[in-house]
Length: 337
Image (cartoon, rainbow, N blue to C red; front, side, top):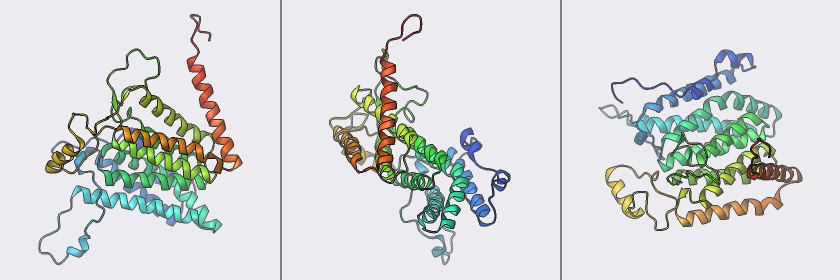
């Protein structure tokens, strides 16, 4: 990948990788310790992809098996997309194993699922974040988002609030254009005099928003969303609504990308040079209407919630409304509202 050594993984991600000594003191033994070692190794390997060219971060839906090519005289090539696919599939299988134990009626299986989730999430979450941040390839984004939803659902079912809210917070971060377009920029609010150039809400953002909607629908209907979880989701949706309505987010009305080229022509040009990337395609008006409809459906379906879930949703809405009203009160010169 070049003569220069790869940069170290992000500090937050490296710090999140658990150490075997710490895990052992928490009661991880035998097979659970093997599981921890496997997940940690996969997480560390994903961090090495930080130095890879983003074009190589792709997901192969039907990768060829290297064992099937043993009869060949020459060794088969092992490409970066193949390594990404195997690594992500391994992580998703770990998530599926936790989900299977979680769905079991056996109490011991649920306890095992809780231990596995507790030791796995500090490695799985940074891996998901790095892949989702670096890639623009649709199949890889879809696979990572499936992992987010499955793992968040399992943590919610197991009443593991810390990993559940960490996963929701991470996904919410990827729904807003601040993260990938202007990472050093703080959110702009109503009344800002210097709005600056319009942000681009890309196809990746839309996929993350839809995953967030799906997560809220599913988890809210089975009583595993508390006030804090709803607060995270609703605050993100409020910010997104503000960005779109205030025209801070660039919206295409003619199906053209950021360079002014039509979407169909852009796809033809991209396919001739490299795999199709939708990172530069701007959100179109139809997609805005679809997202608005999904948001309305989220509240329209609230009548299906249990009393506890509905109370959590209403409480979160009241907290967000109160916070917004406090922000609208003009400050007096002496600092008093």
